[in-house]
Amino acid sequence: MPIAEVISSAITRAFNELYGYTLAQVDVEHPQNPLWGDYSTNVAMVAAKNVNKLPVVLAKEVADYLRSEQLAGYFATITTAGPGFINFTLSSEYLLGQAAQVLKLMGGFGSSEVGRGKTIALEHSNVNPNKAAHVGHLRNALIGQFVERVYEFIGYDVTVQYYSNDLGVQVSTSLLGMAKLGSDFDSTQYAKFDHYAWDVYAKISQQLDADVELKAQLDTLIVKLDSRDPEVSQKQSELSKRILKDNLATFHALDIDYDVIVYESAIKDTLMWEKTFLILKKNPKVYLATEGNSKGCWLVSLADKSAEVATKSTEIEEDKILVRSNGIPTYTGKDIAYHMWKFGLLPVDFSYSLADLGTQQKPLYETNPLGDIKVSFNNSDIVMDVIDVRQTYAISAVRKTLAYLGYSAQARNLIHINYGHVYLSNNTSTQLGYAVDTTQSAHMAMSGRKGIGVKIDDFVVLVDKALQDSFGAFPNSAAVRNAVIKFDMLRYDTFQDIVFDLALALTVKGFTGPYVQYTHARANSLLEKAGYLVDDTKLEYMLNQYTKLALSTSEQEVLKVIYKFPEVVMQSANQYAPNLVCVYLYELCQKFNAFYNDSPILKTAQGDIRDFRLFLTAATKQVIKNGLYLLGIQAVDSM
Image 1 (cartoon, rainbow, N blue to C red):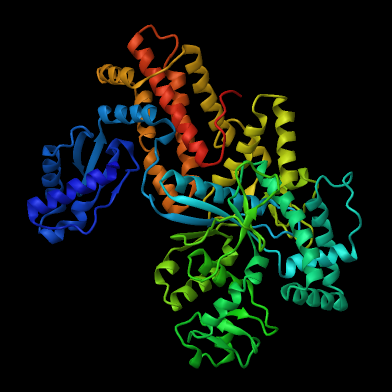
Image 2: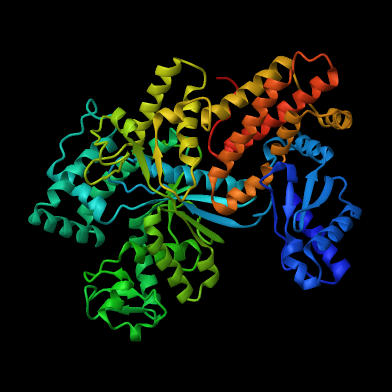
């Protein structure tokens, strides 16, 4: 049981037995000042009026009760402070026991069965198959990979879905560009086909802005593609799948893989949208606009009003369009159908085949009208979508619509994991060959329509070159390169915009992936030199010996970070926050390296002390490895 729950349960019992009062909740936190202990609660101040006690007196009485409880194995001291805080300092026995648990559970330390029996449909990456993936897509995929791993780590069954939007404006623009501007793909000029498609898309987009006739051709193409014109659909399918294959190869180079590809065209071909629309039109919150800019469109009311009162044009424009006046459903409309399928709310499913793309080792399925594999990916308990913050309004429309249809549980379990934009620092932009006006901005914004952006592939090459220039050839260079990229993308709060600077990410010292990898490699080197191995029998004996040792400050500080790992895992999962794991690993590495510098390990004369320090090194190494795994980063044994 987590320590915070141990404290909360004990305090709840104290209030029941001492005062006959049941607490609604007990807030337990880590105090900012370590001198105040490892945990603290202000429950005495919060509940004082309810039991007619002064907070200071109440805190003392509860602390006295807790000391008499069977908590000695957890805490060295339970004290009171200030106006009524109760502070808890963990015992050495407990801390040593947690470190021993690391070496018993190894890769399982920090995991749990919280989500046992529950399924999650996780959607991330979702690059439109019209051009190469860029660094904004990279942040999406890395957050998605973290969510996949951390939720599997706590017991959920997670299926990763890749939504390939092979209908609509962007892919139609790409198809038009290939017809008007495309020539034979020159592999000597472009490293990959999706890079070529990037340039074609940018060129045709710029022409569309100035050519009304060309825009009309695009509109016609969109309608033909949506109506599944055989010739247009065949051409688009071939183009989209060629680009998709290159996109997935890009992610594979970063160890990111998927379970199933869902094509938007499959939603169209199964009549999933039409069946959903029949249901929607019966709902009073869905209506046909008869005036305003949205005249002729079907909309869903997002305000607390029914269709009967949504008559004023200003009110209509505040609602979300589901079907355009030309009869084509919007992304939001199709998203409603798609999410109803994910939750198993529609009497229809896709057919599947194995995707023969060669982009990953584990099986990758795809929707295919001719597929005959007996597998399904719907009926999920929870749906998680990693989509940037600009789609918050659209996702809220899907969630509200589900609730309108009576699916309140599914509406609550539709989770939008949004994230901020990715910019590049001016220095990094210059390294990539872009002209930067430093007087206008401290970073560069990107635009796919203008061809301004950073392809993930180019970015990876740049990081590889920078590492080579800085350090020459070295072992595990690909793993270190991925650590540079992933850690620097994930160390920020998910919801904030980030400015990536290559020079800062490459440093081996400081808050970076290579620094964490280096610490793991250092610990591994120590253990290999010592020939350190441990089994359960030896571990029990050693623990008895270690409780007799007077631990140094640096040794205690390492132990006081190790035990927090399961807590950080749960917190990072609940908040969809890989940055919490990054911060934790950095702190653990700092404490371990301080311990390493302060305390001789291999050269110490005393056997028990040497064994304990190797034990602490082994536990630290394993926790670093577990944390890096959650971030999608390989824990290398040498650098």
